[in-house]
Image (cartoon, rainbow, N blue to C red; front, side, top):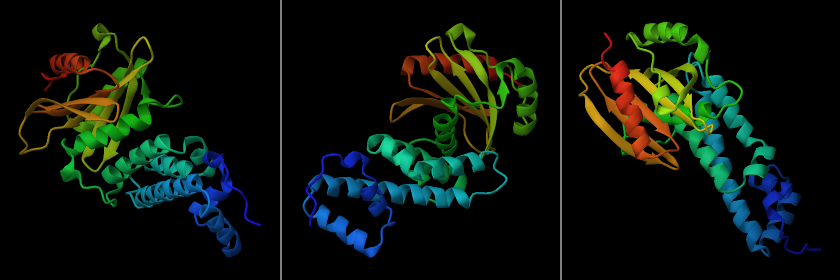
Length: 267
């Protein structure tokens, strides 16, 4: 007997298993009969199939990334977590699509095997890397950084050695931003340092610093928007910078000016 259309398709393990190709022939045939009579179920299966394909592609790309990348293991775990049924059940719809896109951004930057054409982005490759790092680490409540704020001097010595550039303490306290800490990133663009800040309301901002490549021109502050993030990026003779947060262009400009004054005169 054909079952009637259901209204609770947003949390339906049977449809999720069908979209993932996990049902046997008889079970799949039963679901297909249901889909013929249930438009809502058809819409959900279409969305789930697309999301599954995106997540599998991201996970495969991350699995082929160089093993020396410091954050490769974390990215693989993120992709695999997203593929678990529980994540899909909680995040079906726009939320999952945004996270899947974030994973794909990492795969593009650090795996290099996704069909992501970096030449089509309106910003340099290091900014794409910075966006991925912000989306994963800035909101991490367990371990957003490798060096907490109290170990900043030690972190700066380590970062300076990795970047082959002397760095000044990027303190943004005058702007109401307290340093959470620092981490190093190994990316396709090369080593980068991520400084994570938090304001009084708990909103976080990332500053990414990378060595300026030889033969590349310096560039003034430019802006980009990615989903709900506002991004500012610029290059000087020593370093490339990117600042990003869920904030205004005015705050990005203020942070950029402060960072340039603090770090732009290093040797």
